[in-house]
Length: 491
Image 1 (tube, rainbow, N blue to C red):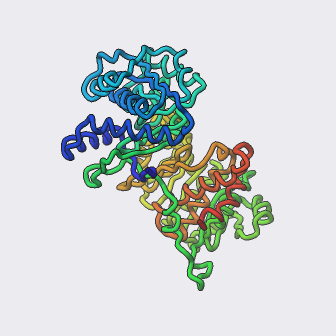
Image 2: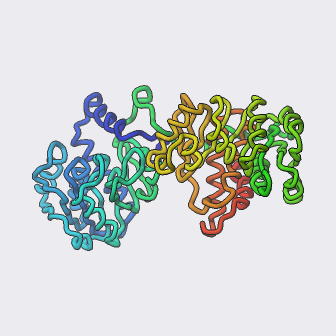
Image 3: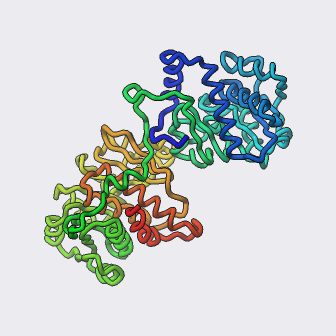
């Protein structure tokens, strides 16, 4: 199955399981058998030449899925070794039945030993799934460590063992899978935080259980390509530049011409009609000579900025702004103008230093460090639970929040947050955040919807990063992304 757009918490997926059993009348063991069948289909599709598999089973329902998979794999003619990390005799419920059926079919599990992992061409992780609570226990951690070092591809059932299914962070030791097949509902932890580092390629099967939209509202949604056309529809033939918005970007204090230049070019590349950059006077020549399509204003006195704001439809502030009194005055003037505004970089740091009244029409785009300053916590606090951090930012600042990083999150009050799966580590270079600021502002000028502009801006920026990294991630420049934006907004 294609990955669904909706993502759920582990508690919601457990509720979906209960709904299937109690309301739909599907026995729990039937769901377990469906999971085993689905996992075997994905495993054979992914590794069609593999004939020997090792299944590492734990003591809960994830282990039950593993015993079902092992039985079906034996019936399909594969050579199967099952290694039990905990005593199968202590299994209960559906997991116990799965073990008994495996044993009745001739299967004989053995106690886990790291050396036995070499018997398989593929290792199946059926240890913990979503059942882990708190740090992984010592014996289980040792088994996970051995799987990660065995030199075989690891195929995880539901969630890589040791990974928090909600926050996407390892709870001590966690399986680093080559691929993961997940069931019933796509779990948030597979796509947020460090989740993608541990899941590998994610496959999905709903086991013929459908969520009721009213009862099971998703915790997250994937930001998908169809949103680009919705926000940026085909242009009428008689269109002119005035139809696509006037953007003012305020930034580039002393010694920082590049930041606003990058944001301005990105704004043009996504299709804004007119883009003006207002910068410290000494930066005008460098920006104008490098990108003549930008209108450059020297911020010599407050009147210049006030007049520019009157002409703008959308404002972005922050790239290269600095934290000087000049920068503070520029931010105060922009916020007083009551225009839709994208706030980034040093403008966010100024907000953290001297908070102002929350607004519903602004878009804040912090990276984890800036988010920590805005909330008065550490970067580690932000990264430990990025969804909770997004919720806290929304509660304090309102508007639309873009929490940047691997798996960028987009949230707004009353909206289901979005997560972006695209992007790559090559984008961890100077200036890529400035490109995102310009892209979001340029799209906002065209669609006039902060929510759509934030989601689509994040997506096309990440897609541009992936396009720029075609030849390799190392050495990707922010200007490479800016050039690629023209293609990503025209897909």
